[in-house]
Length: 314
Image (cartoon, rainbow, N blue to C red; front, side, top):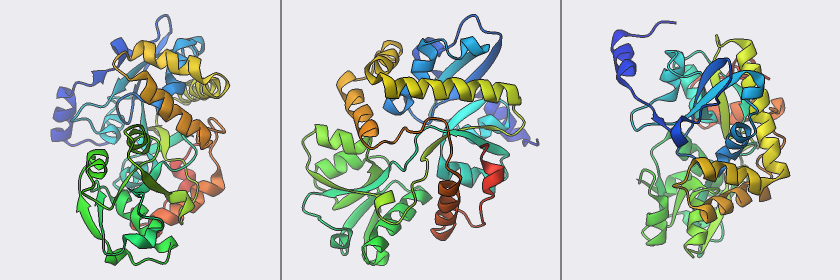
């Protein structure tokens, strides 16, 4: 693998922010690092359940869990050997592979899209957004989500004024500054509900998109297969714990990450469980992946067809 000198220097200087005292599994023979996609939240409860239950250690793995720092770029960390595993949005995996990163997803973290268009409660159908202002983060997948939702209701995507707001959907919608925004229903959607803001959610897999796994566990294609199997099996078992005993799994995460709001995380986890977003744990649906690949290409997230067999270790 070739990494340009400037990137190597940047990565050498990068310090990852560790979670909960570094999340390491003591007493195991092989060390591995896992970079989360965001700060710890209910989506990650299966990982913390696996840590608490020594499921990694029992497979000989001392796993260190890190949340991403402001400057970290998970595909570059994986490619350069600075991390062994990372959780990526599935669209980011596709973009990274198109840019030449030799990465492979080895298991789903969630089994359905988390993306949605969240609107004020006066909006009853996506077509109501024609002529209105909709906030987007600026990521390519946001435009794809918005287009898909509008097109599914026979609305014109060009009739919407798109405003780049970064990750400010909650304050923007709470203040009524926008008619809608692209956001995650399990996070921003829950936050808005808990704040008493009445909304209408248009989840993308209800409006034109397939039921694809939004978040996936990714590694470099040259990672030791035995290590991949151990981490995948332990993580899968952790998410099975979540579905059997969600409160214990949530408590495991809250014990390590003491800055989290227990009520907020309980609400987020309930949203995931109510939507059946975590089941079945650890298994990709090949048909869903192929439908997702077609959808990403159709909506311009990637410019070339995605090699599903190469991109996913099923």
